[in-house]
Image 1 (cartoon, rainbow, N blue to C red):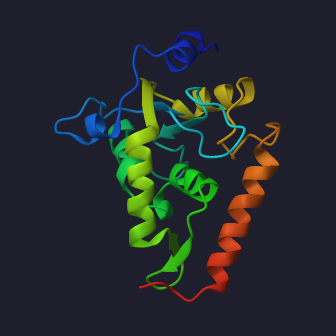
Image 2: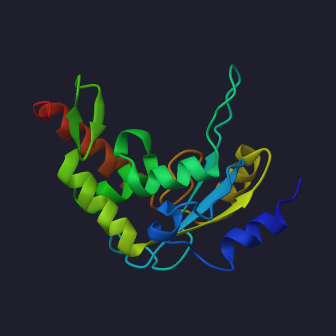
Amino acid sequence: MTFETEREALLEPGRLWSAGEVLGKPGPVPAVPGVYGWRFGAAPYDGLAVGELLYVGIAPRRMANRTSRQHLRSRVRYHFWGNAEGSTLRITPGCLLGLELRRVGSGRRVTFGVRGEAELSAWMAEHAGVCWVAHPKPWLLESALISGLDLPLNLDQNKHNAFHPTLKALRAAARQRARELPVSG
């Protein structure tokens, strides 16, 4: 199974969409399964490329025991304006930018807190651009992209990437610090 058309659509998109466009009503992102790709106009960490495809994600996740209600629109919007607990994409630039990860609520969830999440959302609104491609089985396309491209911000299925050990260590250190701090209100 080749994914050349979809791969090219993510590598050479006709355009990138900003937070303002994605979060507007009705918004351009379709409510269908697919893969989304992220680029940043400023590097969240020294040595990462600016303007290049750095991360891909999917909606819905592949789940053997139930049907996910997620789709491209819900996931892309959440990444721009949700919180780190529900978005591995948000955890990554937040940690790379040095924001403090904190346990919240019952202490089981972690976010960057109200101020940190607002700061991250503002950074993403200024620097992040997203594109997407519809696909009925996005997990297949995601695996092919991660294995064949240099996507330094993806952790899952990406141990071969040179940035993987650095990103994994930074995220682990942020989670460890969060466990040592009191639960944030």
